[in-house]
Length: 272
Picture (cartoon, rainbow, N blue to C red):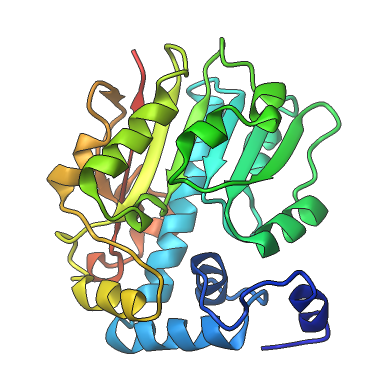
């Protein structure tokens, strides 16, 4: 759905001929910030996994419910959201600043298009703050030492680390665990990990979808429930634990979703 803004985006020297996970996700959510390569990749996935749009919406809504819980029940006022994706309202800062306008959020993504849109659209309340940095999940040290992170977040106070539908882009299991632990390491007691990812045990049976993503250069990997649960080792799990995204403290919309339509599992854990 190329439009008049395509020329402007291309001037950023983006690889618009190659599908990118953030733009494919945007397309599946019904957004408009994507290119032909992204749409082609998404449609190929939908052919083998017709549930994909529902699953992506369930994942997005999981983020909203978790963020609201963290802000209201957990009292968290600082958030580090890695793998942000293109802005789609309600964004995380809109949810948490709706509870407390002083909340602070740092968004992280590795797509320059996300950076462009985030700077324009992710506007904080006057009392709070939202920042965006271009960085990659595979380099947690660069994220945790970034001036924008250190200037925006007070790491002596609880922070919610949000890894929503992003850890499946790290294929190596040991490396994925190392990354999550490195990100959690400097966060104090009372911080949280909110994580969701593709589950091979899910009723949606996502193996074909994962394979199709990989064929289009969007390298992703599904994991079992046991493997996903390992990311929360050492944390106190918040009920109901690691479950299908639409089962985590569901609202009315989530209750209407059939299990066969969701391949993403998620959970929330508190650092003791």
